[in-house]
Length: 548
Image (cartoon, rainbow, N blue to C red; front, top):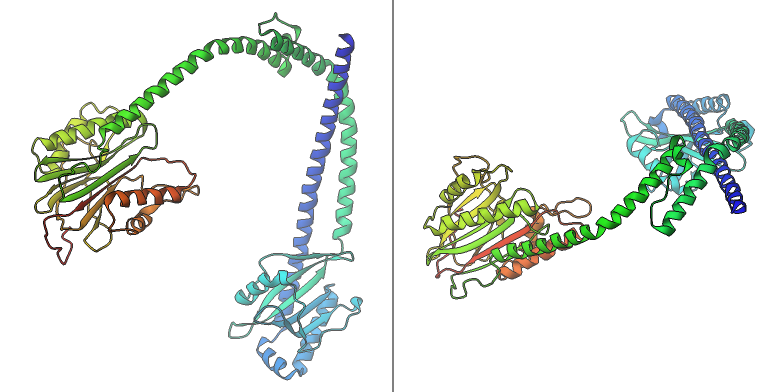
């Protein structure tokens, strides 16, 4: 056992020391790399700024209004020679490789040289006036296009590294007196001290990191055995014992240690007691969760049974076609729809959305649905009066401050005339016979249960044979995809008008399928409820204008 403990002690020490050394090397490498990159960027930017300053000086020498004449004749004049001399002097004085001026072709592949100054140390001949070069780097096309179109600088710094030297290039647009970009001036400047400075920086960092590593390893090894290794081994042995025995043990020495080791030892001891208690409670919790899940399933079934789900609901009535659906966002939702005959000649249909989600919203929904239907079946044909009565009852004892948006309509079946009230709900859509679905927008009343004594607006409308109404909750236009893009009213209308003359069930299923395809794998955050109503009537004619 002692030999095993000594072997474990050495193994832990080696691992910890190696880990510390690795961390120091890694951190040193990261710091060195970051510093190296930042150091390089600063020098590159300084060189690039210098190149642009030289380009601005050279630009002031030029007479862009004569560029077209020079290129047309390929013949320099006295002013051309004077400017060329100035550029040559500037190239030599500023230690630039090249300063050149050229006209860029429309496809940004060729450059026609006007001026070209080459530093004497390079031993190159200058490009003569009018020479066309097709060796433009395709990687610079974007920058050249930006320069030509804006007359300003390149969008990015331009650097080139090769085995001989590193250099930076500045590019500016040259405009004539009319403000038109007629050429590009380029300055290539060697970054002469960059490589030397970077090598010096790297050497200093390596030396500093090596010294830090040696000192840290020696100090750490002396401290490690006394303060860390022995207590960790004791905690490890206790954890192995508990894993095998599944019972609490006695206190051990490491529990009196300071700092994190003592905290760890005491935590292991506490963990033993917590695990035993957790195992005892796990079965109880699992059983309770299963019971709650079963109750929620029952609640979902009860809520679904409260909504009309048998279609057609009135098979003997040919004057209209109606279909509705609801898909809750959680096990139970706050949306609801309903439709019912008040008498033989009046039908009411309603769609609503309770604030909030889950069980509280579902309970409020049951109360609101029941009150609306009861008030309407008492012989009240006015949606506004129905909502006013329901509002007073819902406001009583509404400590949760829930509210419900409602769209309610009552239609006289024999004439197609109806009244509708909108209490803070989504705008309905209407399709006239042989037409398309369109939003019908008008001023809303506040939501139901927001304030006692509320009066609600209602408006008259008339449906003619072949007209259809589609109402919905905000779960349709506010359905979002994985990128948080809303489905929106425009997509909803496109889905409705894909098959506008289909039966109501087909139309609603098509809208639902379109929403599902748009949302994709994104979770459903709101209930999705829809109701469609088509008026078949008794042969009435459609008016020339919409009376809604």
